[in-house]
Image 1 (cartoon, rainbow, N blue to C red):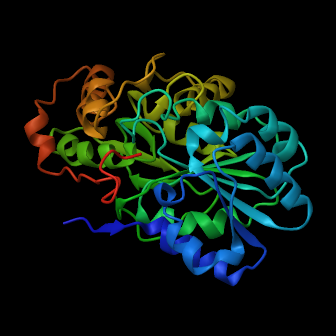
Image 2 (image 1 turned 90 degrees about the vertical axis):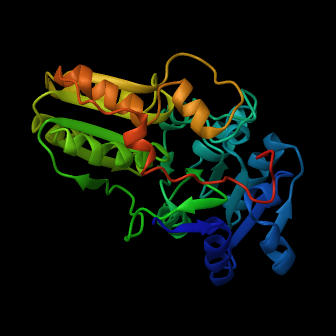
Length: 334
């Protein structure tokens, strides 16, 4: 049975911040929703509430960075770039401040609908000069992303998982080091965040059907290791499938497409994720099924690439499902 870790971010941030007094914890009125309420109560001298005023919070954080502090900003991912985009560019990215933007509820991990779902954040953030973009895919990466992000000489945007998070990996997140989760020579699968668990679910069933999958897990989306992606893609027979909790346009699907095109490598590419649409509200498993972002969608994409039917149905995949409840204390997941 896969280990589930409750609120790994809360413990990891507190452990790091108490050792580094120049680290400040900033909240934009979503303190308990971003698992920093305990830190606020125990370490009020390192905590600042900026209220529901994200534009001001980002400008304020730029000033703190200029003064030698390393502020960690906590909000839902969508509120760290969509509303305060001008402040993000002018106060943080352009002057290369050491501001850490901790974005919770990436993609369809919230039923909150369009206003709360960060579905274009990778596309936006990876285009910004000086910005590093990281994404945690399990409890171990959530635990290690805090200290790792704080090593960057410049701003960092992180896609963070909250609540009960499965532990998939034994080793910590390291910037620039993608994980090779399985070696195979039929199809290359590239995933990040919550889609990695879906690919793991699909992999064993595919192996039983005679399909050999090479599976890469990305935790560093910028800087992007295009050369390594191309090397892996060149070693498989049928092509590449990307599966992401994001729009395929501008996200990992586009990043891989750019890498293949620039290297002149002719490989078929199937991009799974949100297809030029906003997502509506619903549970994470429902939304991932509805928008073709789950293990079964991956199996069907691989069948199209290889031209063979695997005979795999949802029943074969259900046995290895791990459901993470995103917040035990907030049933509405907001």
